[in-house]
Length: 95
Image (tube, rainbow, N blue to C red):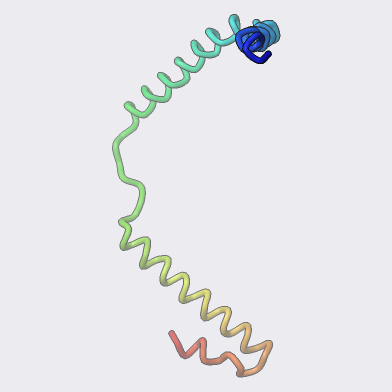
């Protein structure tokens, strides 16, 4: 019995989708046209900007983050030491 409806079922699904999505025939070309101009505008903007590198080298970023990690570890150690006594004072001695 399935072979009788095997070809008809996709046609029904496609017809139903086309019926509910027929407005897309008018909307999609306008959307693509607008998208093209936005992308072209972005491309032209990038070409007109001066070329410069705004990030640090990876080793500089790593050393900055390591220094920040050491600073926060020290702050955590001092705060914990104040709250808990000298139980975790060894954290300060690590750095």
